[in-house]
Length: 248
Image 1: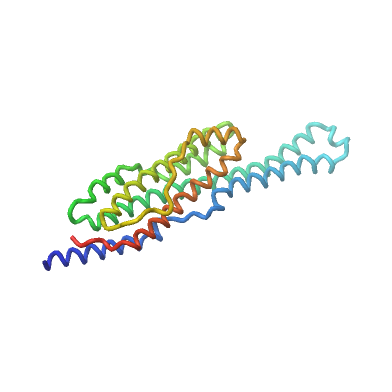
Image 2: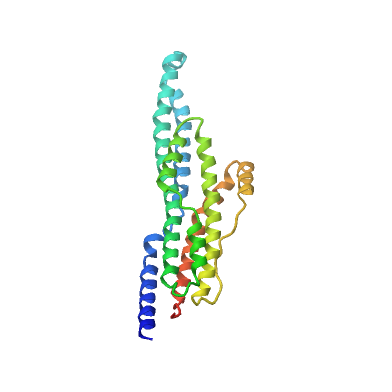
């Protein structure tokens, strides 16, 4: 009996310790952040249009008719705007992809440890195995690859395809981890239902809608990629706070 009480105390202590790490692992992404590259690109587009308007009216017809000088002036002006905008957008987008991937990895690691801390009789082994089976991608590698491809002319489409892949993978992985978590929480005493559930979204449909709407629908897709995990984390926290793991 004494040994069982000691194990129960240690189990509860480990559970609460891991639970309290959630502020470090479950990153709540500000919803404005994923849209920042698009905002910068939009502002840059306005600046470029303004240059096309401003430069011609700033020089006389005789200067404009001097084709080499005018063309070089316009081209260099556009480059001075385009290159910094592309570089900044690529860096921010790379950072966003890094945080999107990393927060899944960190969350999965914490949840696995959480269930492991109360795994006294082997009930949660299957749940732990399911979570452990989910892929852990290297966030730095993906961020660098996508960021570099975005800057290189004619390769930005490859960057977009990789972004679609990451969006697809993260959605499917969060759906899977939520199902595993539900089973694990039930086994340690949770009785209830989730107020928010990750939607298993159709990647093919979202790509088609993004193309048909000339990219407008992709703004909604980006929102879901950022917000779905945010709500998932908050729901996990609510469930974790409502559970007192049973003694072995």
